[in-house]
Image 1 (cartoon, one colour):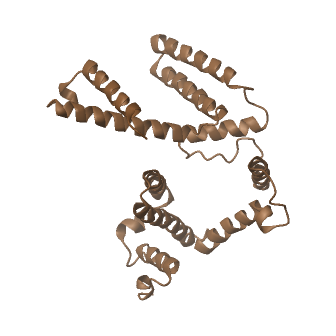
Image 2 (image 1 turned 135 degrees about the vertical axis):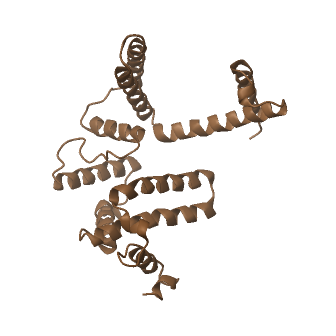
Image 3 (image 1 turned 30 degrees about the vertical axis):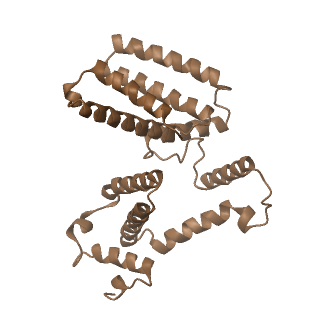
Length: 272
């Protein structure tokens, strides 16, 4: 097995063996041995975000490394599953392979490929609903992962509810609800406890996510883009302040707000 960990011609077998060795209770790495599913889960989530970050930046060299880091997370979890007798890498790989074949009867079965993207999405959801029924997940919201980012989970919950008719008919009603929730938050700020303020704030965020769904806007991606834009513009404000021999802490809101407007104008006038 020592030879296998250096054999680049068997990449998956090599990686699986490396993880097995790291987890070996007698000769492995003490840190790796101590880990469990719960302690590794945050790293799994972090690696997924780092993959997304590399994609957004268009850095293919970085993406190669980040995909490797994410793959390691799968191998890590499957090694722990194997040790406990739950599953192993082969069963995990076969599980997803079976799922992909079952969910694509128009590719691997007799169904016609001549269908719209909308029809394919509808068929996909029917297949997933049947899978949930087979797992005794009868509730409309069953199976929406609790560990998802809150904004993403809000949209998934709303989509599930919409499938059974629990949805506003248009964006007008959603916007009206946003106005209502904003008013309730204002009232809570002035009269209620911090816990109640947080609840009203959560209600407002939930409805805003719903508006994005009605507008066919990916709320998670839209907020990610807004974060990127804010970072870019604030860094420009810092650069403009630096030209004046200042830092943000040596400035004030009025000056920084004016520089923010200048940064926005620069972007608007920048040639494509």
